[in-house]
Amino acid sequence: MTIRFRSTLPSPAGRGVGGEGSSNSSTTAAENVARSRHHLRLAIGIVVLAATGAALAQQFPSRPIRLISPYPPGGGNDVLARLIAEKMGDALGQRVVVDNRGGANTIVGTDIVAKSAPDGYTIVLVPNSFVTNPGFYPKLPYDTVRDFAPVALVALSPQMLVVHPSLPAATVKELIALAKTKPGYYSYGSSGNGSVGHLAMALFAVMAGVQMEHIAYKGTAPAVTELLGGQIPLMMSSMLSVLPHVRSGRLRVLAVTTAKRLPAMPDAPTIAEAGVPGYEATLWYGLVAVARTPEPILERLSGQVEKTLREPDIIEKLSRQGVEPYYHGPKQFAARIREEIPKWAKLIKDAGMRIE
Image (cartoon, rainbow, N blue to C red):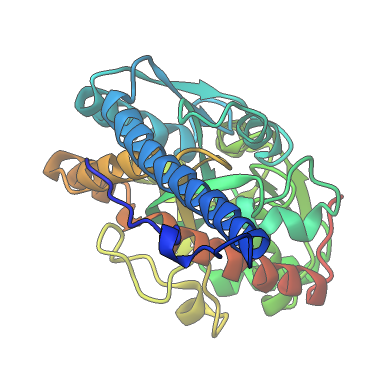
């Protein structure tokens, strides 16, 4: 690339004769030289940055990428992370290694990324709790907006209201009636305090006018295990985590949390039509990196996510689990995050929800 500059230095004819005006002309000439050098440095810097960014994108990745699932193995987040990791690794020519770091409603795993090097080699698959946690935890170890660089929104997943077969409630109306007979007696599990399952169930309780005890687990998998064993009677969970157990008959689905019935479960009513008008709650998943990650690397990762979500086998595998591939690039995903944080904070405050 060739960069040309037009000289802004005055011609010799412009200088004073016999010393007249020589001081002012010398000062002006010196200022122009300094300005030209400054412009040259800026231009060179821009070219170097552009070349460096392009080189980074072409060379990335040169080693395995660490994809953190902020939950224990076996839950919906873990399943989705492994599907994405396998396909992206094949396409990028480097392994994408899933690292399960559950705890504190995804805060533990998310904080690892917040404190990682801004090089694109450590990313995390976050659910909605990424935007709901600020409403629950006033002193997070990171700033949800300032400390992260969104990569891509990946998928939408409806929640399912499921119960253990021993619970004497076959419909949402029967569950509400049962809960009203013994306020606070029946408990529900979730993947953690402030998780989407917690919020979805708490919202259900508020809108249905019932009181139930919340039991928080360190991830979806242990909560589902307790539900299967009958230690807890019900929970709201992603379809990724509970649909196989519903199909095997080990759990009973009462309703789904979406506004419309799902093709994967056409016989399951929505909570809104089953007895709680106006109810809706949907889980999403997205990838984020640490702030200051070079934009070319973010675009490379995001572009590969988009390609992965278009692959027929990925679409088929996700749809079998009731999950919809749903891509938004870095800017769209960042806008969604900024919009949802105050929305959820208001809901949490107005509903009187709190971390036990």
